[in-house]
Length: 258
Length: 251
Image 1 (cartoon, each protein chain N blue to C red):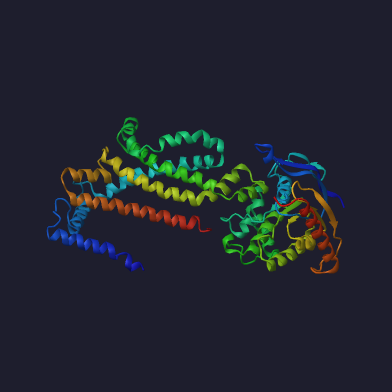
Image 2 (cartoon, chains in turn orange, green):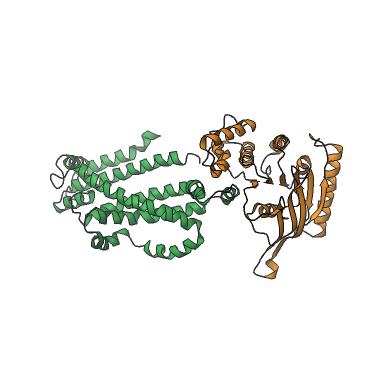
């Protein structure tokens, strides 16, 4: 398997007016993601997980370091990188199917063709019967399925997911995790999955990077290596979870919360 | 519920009629509802000045309003989108807007007549000025009120500038634009009637009609004319509300 995304010595500093207000988000981060893998990132809230995704997405500018996609440096928003937001970010004035096909519309795909393609996603994602509904009429889980479909229909090389199930209740959350894995089994997208939920990180991830508080660095990368479907409370799963929690607790104890 | 709404106006009309009939309110100051109704019939049938029928006054007034309003819409919405989107453009144009905005549209009448003469152009210009600023400010606010995550989503989808303006900014700002349009047409309509007080070449227009009625002291026709102005304003707003219900049904 080849490396799809490589992060080398990535730094992000928010300039402040005084030395005290300078924020060092991360100071030299390194990791790489294999093609077709789900790479989970967990870390304490405020540690810069979202900032990391936003840098890769091109929504914010890095201070220094490298973000390489298939060996080539990424600059700005690139159509090879897709993003799924926690807040869904569906266009409220577009019907469900119009939200899914928006990426194709931007690429200039013929209206009839893109509608046919979008309807295929509507069926595959279990959204049939709602294609003409506006986002306000959909449940949280449905909205996030639309958002995932909208991202995947463009076939990006890397899919960034920023706490995608963070606003859902735990029941829906489990259903969505399984749904995501089902879709992934068929397509083998390369996914960078940010979450603060350790259970979730272990359940979906092939590898899990554990981040320290700010300035964030990678404490450890776990290779899960368990077959899917996984057991949410399996022995090996629980062992990894407790290792991660221990790491997070230890790193939180080093620096008292400010 | 709906029935209750018409009780207060009917009570008022009855009271008004009673006070007029008993002579508490002198007819030359305020004619009775029945007299006003007769005045309205005169405006429709005979016209004021005679021969200048009500529907033609309405026609000319609406024509002026629509021209000025269309111009305001065609300029204020694009400018508002630009100012709402770009801090630089906004910083450049805002001082000018803030100086011109507090000037009442009616204060422009002398200049307007000087520039455009007496006629539809000068009246439309006054309406343009009245409608322009509410639409502009609401469009700017509408753009600024769009959720940032939607703008980021559009960037992640690689939206080009054209797609972004037409398919993100315009629909995102639409609720606010429509509010501006409703305020704008109201201000425009009010300005129009006043603009027509100062004279119109064709001898038509609701404002002109009312001023002519005043010259010959037909207060019944003055009040009837005022009511027609109110009713048309109400009708225009109802049309915009209908448009609103359709255009932002996604809300």
